[in-house]
Image (cartoon, rainbow, N blue to C red; front, side):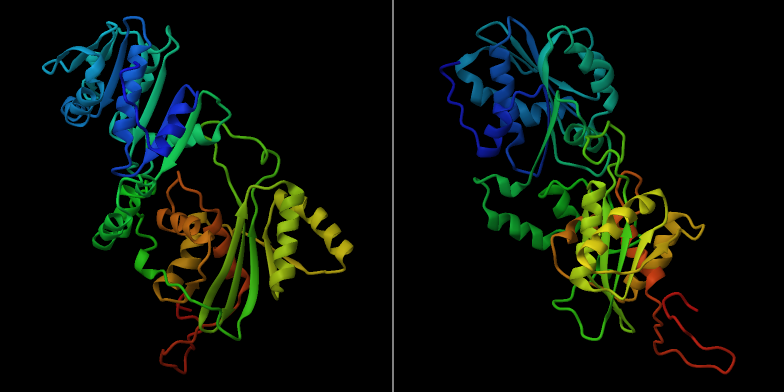
Length: 418
């Protein structure tokens, strides 16, 4: 092992030094995922007692194309023999590195593993890990590295979120973009961005887990404004999350909802979304965030979603009003016996399509747009979108448009069609 000249990028070093048993790395193209995997395969094989380590790609052909030459190049000082026909490399200590295809799970049964890498895990059936490879690590308490570029929200996304959010200390997740590789010219990435769709660029280079859009809201409907127009009335709508578990990490399949506070300026020309404040807060913190938003923006109306959460937050919120001598009325927002998908669609789809909504530029944009374009994907949060949709209940503004006026009726709202 002393003969190896191991050189790592900063992000690779970070993952390398972490002692977590199961590591999940979501990274963009040309980030250096495969090179990190190769070094870990070699070093872990050298540390086993005549054991076996696996590299698993979606197919055996991909395993050969991605990893064989890299292993031969980096590991040549410690390689005893190699057989490309069966994709096995034996090291000087007797340990074996085997390259496998996830499409041939029968070739991976009945082995005991000290370490394994699953590459492009989004393209490997989850049963390969859960029913074959995870049990193979049990007797040696082996470790595993999952690497890949996201391909929407699938089992790789589920595993990444589990590692990122659960209280299972044996899992840990990292996220890196192609910009995290200092050997890759940023200008080359920027050039690729100009010729790619924004969705493809975010997935391939920025390692975004967003799924292909639902088409309920289209990217070309979204417009930004550099400054807030004059003569707007401000409204604030709040979509509350629960409070009892906000300080705890969740289990594998639980949804971590955010409280979202939408601040919107409205007039006859449309909506200007100034800010959407969001987070998972305690009851007192939530009340403080709402109070601060109202004091800062001075809306003419404030609405909070009806329910137990509203009843809970009102007590500390009223206490803050009394302590600060600053009072405001809170309206109760309701679902109106509508399904969430229908309620959000009717409130927002027409407004975005007709250019009646504009956004300010802020840190909240990325989270909001991800929710908007994925809606109504069940694996994607919709808290920020839901808060914005509630503005429809508060802001009673007509959009007259250029429609002809008839004696029998008058068009009051060109978006809703009434």
